[in-house]
Amino acid sequence: MGRWFSRINNNGRWLALAVLASLTLQCLWSENPIPSQGLDLRGSWLLHSGDNLAWAAKGPDLPGWEPVGLPTKQLMPAGSKGWFWLRRNLDLASIPQGAYSMVIGELMNADQVWVNGEFVGSTGSPPPRLRSGWNQFRSYTIPEGTLQAGSNTVAIRVWHDSESWISGPLAILPEEQAGWQAMVNDILRIELIKVM
Image (cartoon, rainbow, N blue to C red; front, side, top):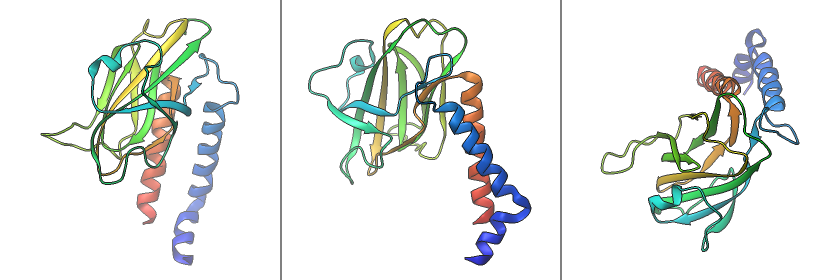
């Protein structure tokens, strides 16, 4: 334990990284986020197992979906596999100006994401050519004009195989902040790998 701790503490890198991460998270997750500063999407979402591409469309909450809190360590029963969807409706007071990204962080295994029915990105791939993207930080550019004043729908289609989790963060952020979040995630991962 002492050797591991001394390697982390080497040259104060760990302290500098901890301060950087703390400041970044404080900037990103204010108590009352507004669109120009980012919109925190942690909390209540709706989940439905199965697959129907019509669920990507913008619209009101759908009947038969169960509430789930995100991020979480387990969305579907352990050992199961297949498709499930997550949806969340959110209201914006005005049309956000500038470039935004949908940030999901990490999830198990492969995903596809839509905002108001507009496909914004994917990571990994489902069978028959399964490629897990579990350890990849997800940040997808939302095309300008996609976010609207009033009601907006975020839909995430997920293929899971045995495990199903989302570690977050979950947010709509200005692209520059999303880039910083991805960079901090990469730096922390690299530093962790160095000390192992």
